[in-house]
Amino acid sequence: MSPDGLEKTAAMEAGPPVLAPGHTYASITDKISSIVLLQRTKRGWWFGFAVAFALFMVLNAAIGYLMLIGVGIWGINIPVAWGFAIVNFVWWIGIGHAGTLISAFLLLMRQAWRQSINRFAEAMTLFAVASAGMFPLLHMGRPWLFYWLMPYPDTMGTWPQFRSPLVWDVFAVSTYGTISLLFWFVGLIPDLATLRDRARNRLAQMTYGFLAMGWRGSARHWHRYEIAYLLLAGLATPLVVSVHTVVSFDFTIAVVPGWHSTIFPPYFVAGAIYSGFAMVLTLAIPLRQFYGLEDFITLRHLENMAKILLATGLIVAYGYVMETFMAFYSGSTYDRSMIMNRMTGPYAGIYWLLITCNIAIPLTTLWSAKLRRNVAALFVISLIVQMGMWLERFVIVVTSLHRDFMPSAWGMYYPTIWDWATFAGSIGLFLTLFFLFIRFLPMISIFEMRGLVHQVKEEKA
Amino acid sequence: MMRHPLYGLMAEFETTDDLLNAAQRAHAAGYRQMDAFTPFPVEGLAEAIGFHKTHVPLICLVGGLIGCMGGFFLQYWPNVIGYPLNIGGKPYNSWPSFIPITFELTVLCAGLATVFGMLALNRLPTPYHPVFNAPRFELATRNRFFLCINARDPKFDAQKTKEFLQSVKAREVSEIES
Image (cartoon, rainbow over all chains, first blue to last red):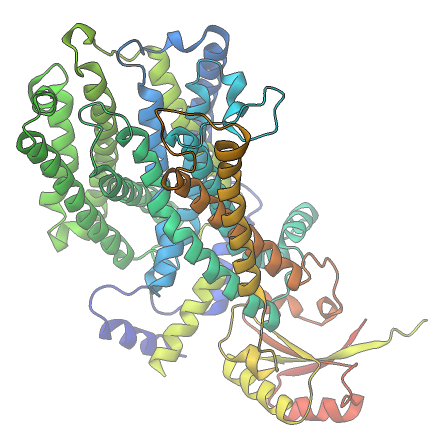
């Protein structure tokens, strides 16, 4: 199989190839497994891990102090009883959804460009859900009673309020975390076997061997495996929509102006995919740079992700326009007042920064194919989108709470150093887990890339 | 030295087409107890070695139904029978508000059933298997394709099967001990 043949196939498709030409099953296996199985860890990894771990320690300090003193160390008050904790929770869960979309939905849509990004995107989901899941527990006034949210047989004869979105959240996020973990681990099994067979020291061999569970690539096993994988993808896809819908229900079920809106479920889901793909780009660009993976994560992948950013950004923009339009069209004093407050009130600066980050910058730049293929520009845009999406959650939570129906109940919310510490710390947790992942596990799905080489060969033949 | 009984004959191939071809010819020749080993799933291979129906989808469905009914019942029982609360005369069986949890538990139980069902049907974890003794078998997770004909197959004959495998363009044919 000459490299020329593969180049011709790539040239026949418009745009950059999904897999750079010239790769074989062996070269892909060796390239990806060598990143994990090297004897000495790269210096750059140690540096990144040190920064991430330091932030993680900040998180531990913040949580420790929170448990000691209570939620009063945060800036929450009456009327703004929900502050950073809920903003961060929604932001992290939203980020997680893109990983599942790439793994599950793009698999069902038979998109070949999913193969090289799905492993680390799904890992990103897992770690984002881990970071998110802490906040509902931390933000409780009595976190030691968190288990009351679960329907366990208790001596008080009481049950959780199954009609409440907060309880729906418990089930939704737990299901999402479990299914993502299963999906990710099942996808890893053949690659763990690859690492087991390639490992150079005994400890690595035994650990990967144990986790690979004796996988030997049997055709019968592959048959069941593929069916199970497709079924899991089919199950995970509706989760993308349902979990963030349930999260949006946390707001819509309330009567507060600016929250009680039927546009929230689709608007939240689109926003989740928007911020999630931005995070995938933020991770993919340095990874391909530092680990030399440009052959696998090509400009085609980056451009496709940028297109999805553009599409979901447009849906989010539509959400903003509709919110504003409906607020005026409804004729409700409270809704009109709420939207005027967002645009001209004390938090107006945040609102307009949000519009700039989420709409003005990405939706004017991502139309250009040249910018979509400019790696540095994409990296900057992805960071801007993530910041914008965080600001959006902040605007939704704080501006609606701080001025609702009764002016006598109006107040202000100012985050404290502990709010920021917990937020930065959650980023530290995410990055720590991610650095561990890229050091010890293959960040690109090896067997699926081999399948891609096979597919390209078949198409050429 | 004790002689280990023979497990089977392993043939190594360099391309998927060679392996598929060999598997189809072996099936046509009457061999049934065989398995193929590849670094990625190859379409048509499972059928070629005679494997057709799997029960994984059924397990997934059953798991999903258990989750669905269990989830609904979990909410129905406390709210209708065990501890009904009259809130403004609203119905006890407020089934629309029971849908999110029911849906999530359906997906959860279906997913768990699928994964553990697939692993159980594949008899994984299996720490030891004789095929790992084949020479160069670690290439089954890299770039080589293997076909193994079990010694327990009724048509197996050490000499004739070896000749057959050599005739289907195997790169190497080797005996595996149990």
